[in-house]
Image 1 (cartoon, rainbow, N blue to C red):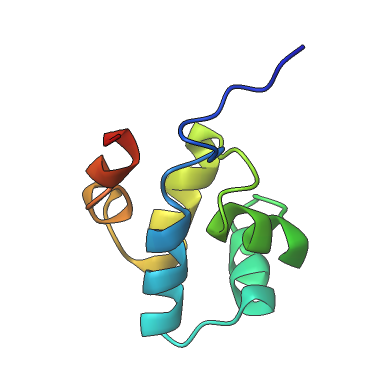
Image 2: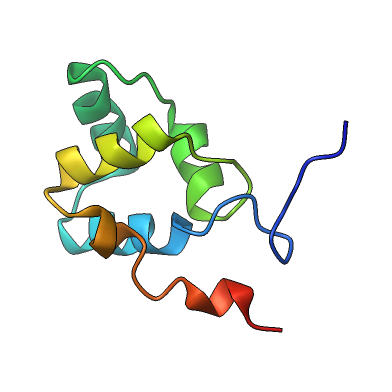
Length: 86
């Protein structure tokens, strides 16, 4: 089964996830711990792969990122139109 991508990316929120995580000075291990506290298990390698477009993101994971970072889904998906441009 072929994996679907958008211009070679498996997600479009990775750059924003990294941006907001870094703005709040939250490390990859720390965001994993925060996610675990709300019932979403992720590993450091998962965060890395999401941030670099190498892993898909489930809807509940996107919402969990928003919850632990204190941002909205609009923030997480801001400026993602670039992925649709040729």
